[in-house]
Image 1 (cartoon, rainbow, N blue to C red):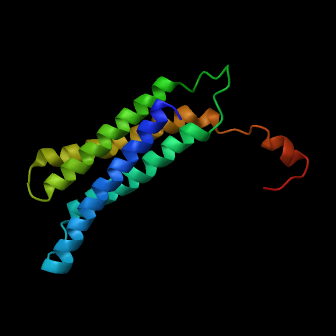
Image 2 (cartoon, rainbow, N blue to C red; image 1 turned 30 degrees about the vertical axis):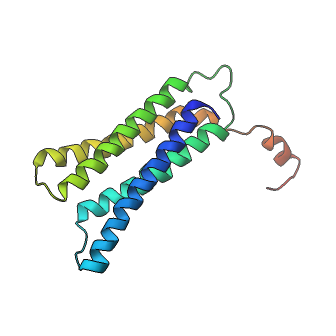
Image 3 (cartoon, rainbow, N blue to C red; image 1 turned 90 degrees about the horizontal axis):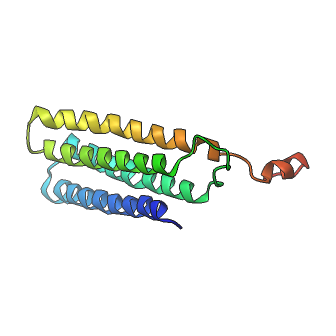
Length: 151
């Protein structure tokens, strides 16, 4: 497992625990003190767990397990995969922090950070899948399928 794969997976785990801590705090507030969570906190929690954990984990494992890029592949680039990581990290982290802050601070700038973070998530995921597209291919399985093997 090489560095970028480990970085994706460990970042995902960090987002998981960040989301779990926020979720635990919201649960305690609701169940013990009768205070329902602010919608911005709910959104921050959802993005930490779903994009921060689930997507980072999926992207890291895919990067690790998908077939290597063909020697003549002009589309896949480790640099592009790393750029996708940083875009997605900054966008998701910024969105999480801005939404969590919006629960207690009413600043229009935070709304812009949330929007830019959301758009950055789209760009990061788009770049990742555009880069990985050619690595989604058969490596031997198509030959076994042609002979009638079922998976």
